[in-house]
Image (cartoon, rainbow, N blue to C red; front, side):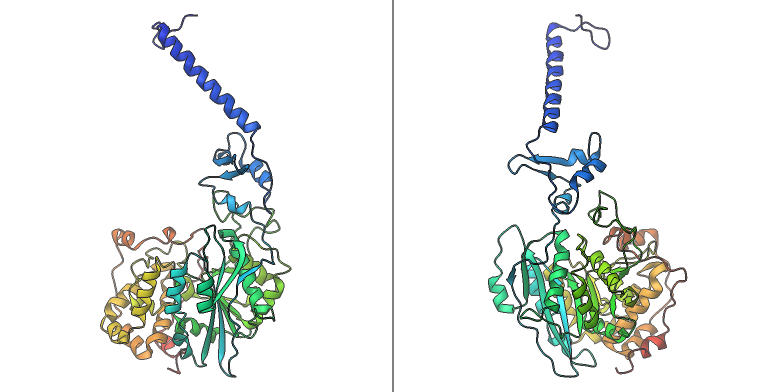
Length: 486
């Protein structure tokens, strides 16, 4: 056989050997690949509730993208997935139970005198987040910051909800010191956050040592938020016969069937609907004792889902309470939820501005415990009223054009209402006296301020834009509504 190059030039014997060797190596590697594919030591099993074999039929196989991100661990004889599908390792293990052993218990739920209110607060955290828990205890979980912030005296009872992490972290000393840890023996993961919701309701409902059925209100939250107690308590004024749950609501959200998203929901877990029932962002929401009791009882009849917030929405629907949900523009602002296309929305530079924080209910995703501690200390400095009075022009200029045309009216109204609650009506009047017409932001300024699609989770955290934009409350309405007692 005579070999020639692509230019028709005869190859030397050495070149011929090199070509044959190259072809042999390629054929050998192909053989090894095919052999591995059909005789892997890894076992094909379903590890949890999700049918892994069905998922592979849909998205794996020859020439499909999932196949190339699935490897075999020959030691454990189990398949595992690499980025961008590493989240599937936890999803395919999702098999929650309702009776995990208790590792740490909080103290007993306190009793309160008649006419005073008990607020039970469940905060999702992880064993390794000890510094963050410490920062929360020193800031907005300090009972002194709640007691005199409402017409009735408030008693705060916070508990932290935890599982176990891979690294062995002892919580015995922390648990004995603060008596506010509720830890169960399950593995921490994104998909096991639902287990924390389930065990929190168990704590609320069970009439044993682990009980708190006498709480008047229940607040659920994350450990990376800064919460302004007086502004959250202002939401209690909105509770009535038809409003029993308040948070940042996601309406008519389509179920995510995108295998590339960590919010992917397999059809075998949710097959009877195309859209989730309305649900709240888990960063912070408030519910009444009556609803919390109903949810705690209903959890036995509603299978847990790997996405915690949506599972709560399904629970709420199962007890026919969806119509009792109210979406708070203030809470939505703090969890970075704005209507699509609102533009000009960013709070990335407002962490350390106490005059801005005073108008919020919460601020979600604080970058560090140190930053959260500093921000809250600034919010509680004794001369803050004078500081914010002196910088009123800067503050009103900032918030007047912060959230873009689509969202500005409703978010600004909520912010001003909180600002009045925090500082009083006289300071609100002075702030509004500084309001002026401002030029629209340039594209360069818009880019510096950020885009809401780059913050948070835009595939979940967006409201539908209302057909009729909400009208911002007038100055008199903001001052007088719910603030007559100040």
